Length: 415
Ligand code: C6P
Image (cartoon, rainbow, N blue to C red):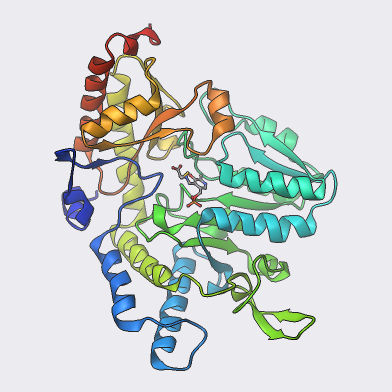
C-alpha cells in the first residue's frame, strides 16, 4: 500500500490552498503534479551542469550529455526496451505519434491500405492518421465500443485483415478509463504483417509496462503525466523499425554528414532529435522515474484500483449521476468521467473549483467519442499516487453542494 500522507509531503503544490480550501487535485489525466525530487533535479541541471548536449568537449557539455543519455537508458529500463537506442525523446506523446504517422505512415502506406484505430482514441491518435491517410490514400477503420466502454473484439477480428498496415490503439482511454487487452489485438495485427502503435499516454504512468511482453512496435507517452516535467515525451520503437524510418524534423544533431546538396542522417535515435533537445527536462524526468520505481509500479496500480473502486461506489450514491466506462475497477484506470444531472460539465467544474477540487470538464480531446456518448462534454476526476479517500469524499461532498447550487436540475436526467 502507498503511504499517501508521506507522498503528499513530497509535493509542495499540495500544501497550497485554492479559494481558501485544501487543494484536491483530481486532474491527473491532464497532467500530474511534481515531487520536490523532480523540481530539485531540474534546478540542479541549471545550477550545476547546464550545456548543450552532444555538441561540446568541455566538462559541462560532457556532463549534460551523460545525464541526458542516462535518462534515455532509464526510460528504456522502465518500459523494458531491449536497448536505450529504442527510446526517442520528443516533446510529448502527441509529437511521438506524429513522428510515426509522418515517418513510418507516409513512407509505407499506399492507396486503400488500412489504418485501424478505435472509437476511444484521443485526438492525438486520430488527427495525425487522418492527415497521413489523406496524403497517402489510405483508409481509416475504427474498432467500435461495447456498451460498457470496452472494445468490441469480435468487430476487431473482422476489421483487422490483409489490408491492415497499421493498428494504432490506446492502452487506456482518457475518457472511459478502459484498459484495453492489447496483446490479442497486437498478435492479430502481426498475423497480417501490420505494425502496432500503442498510445501509452494514460497507461505508462499508472501500470507497469513491458514492451517486450506486449510485442508492440511503437509506444508513445508523456513525462508530464507521470510526475515528470512538461515538454518531454517518449517514442519507443523497435530498433529495426526505427532504423528503417526517415527523419521527421531536420537540422542540427540529426545528421552525420552534410553537403550542399544532400545529407547523411544520424543513427537511431538521434536521427529523430533535430535541434537542441529538451535535455534539462529529460534529465529531471529521470528523477520522476526514480520516484515511481521507489513506490513500485505494482503498488501504484493497486492503490489506484482500490481508490477507483471506492470512488465508483461513492459517485454511484450521488443522485443523478451517469458514470461512463467499465463498472469494474480492475478493468479500468483511475479516470472517471461522468455527467451530473442536467448540469453542464463546465458549471460542475466551476462549482467544484470553489470547493478546492480540481477536475477537468470538457471533451477531453475526444470529440467523436463525446458524440457516441451523446453528451457535449463530461466531468472527469482522475487519480494518482497522492490521492486518497479524503479526496474522493471532498469530490462527492462538493457534488452535493453543486446540486444545491443548481437546485432541482441535478435530479431531472436521472429521473
Ligand atoms: N490527454 C487529457 O486531459 P500530450 O498532450 O501529447 O502530452 O498527450 C496526448 C495524449 C495522447 N493520448 C491520450 C490517451 C491522452 O490522454 C493524451 C493527453 C490529456 O486527457 C490532455 S488533452
